[in-house]
Image: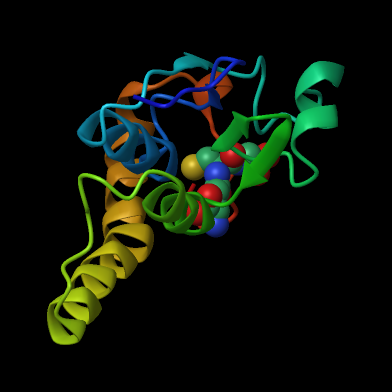
Length: 135
Ligand SMILES: N[C@@H](CCC(=O)N[C@@H](CS)C(=O)NCC(=O)O)C(=O)O
């Protein structure tokens, strides 16, 4: 479906809703990819390989055709343009605005709630490092 010569890779973390929404988009679009989790993300001492890949030191990072794309919203916009079918955004501008509002709520409120709950069951080394996460 993609016609890629190099495999698509996603740096992610299982506790990161930002990374998970990118995974969902890739799967919904039927784009084959492999994923990996950076060692010690959020600790300030991730691997050199990851630091070279992500200038922000955050997941998700999409590696595609020799490019590293960061920020989940930017990645979703890119995927919609690069792999237009199936569409994930509605064609109607009002419906599209609604979809983006839902994404925004998930990035802010939902993300903080998820982290709050994860914090109770995860060890500190699982901390994914977003300063918005309550401690
Ligand atoms: N605005 C970014 C936020 C990404 C983000 O905050 N990722 C967290 C995981 S939930 C992270 O990688 N933190 C690592 C750190 O801050 O060291 C996006 O949408 O991708």
